[in-house]
Length: 233
Image 1 (cartoon, rainbow, N blue to C red):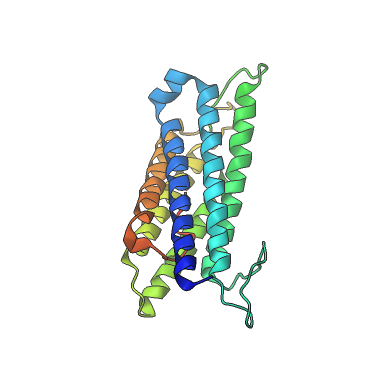
Image 2 (image 1 turned 45 degrees about the horizontal axis):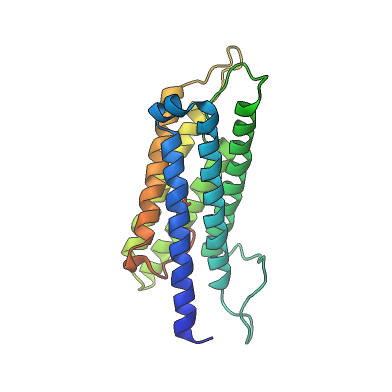
């Protein structure tokens, strides 16, 4: 395969990653809008979050594969293994942690959907970002931001990549705030601060959406991987 054809395939995959994150982030943002939940009901709103998490996971997997393909060649051959263990490579590390976070969101949104579909459930709740998934997103975003900064120090300035990293860190922080605010008070079973939790989900989703849109810019082509999450979400 020629260098040009390889670059073309990489660019095509990066666009797929961006659009998958755009769709997933849009669904997360839509589900966090109170008027939407009131209009369609909690069951359909829970389904919106679950479908959004699937788009996130698809994008995160492609981004993980992008990180694997970007690893240095071993001898005269390149790495084609499905799974690679390379924790010292920041791009790989960010992608792997991000993928784990999206899988955890799949699980938590799936549980929320199941509960909302249960006829025996007496009090339905809309999904909120959970602690483990939010921590994974935050760590992944910080690692990706550090990777982007290291590239700039090495004489390879990537201003667009840096902006994407900053936006995604902000989105991860917002998801983390939402997770903390969604803590359920054991004595009453109520969410500690439902309004703040809902706002954190919305802000985080919009940040991830912004980062995904920035990925479509020509300036971000061949940028370091795992910067959304992205994505990020």
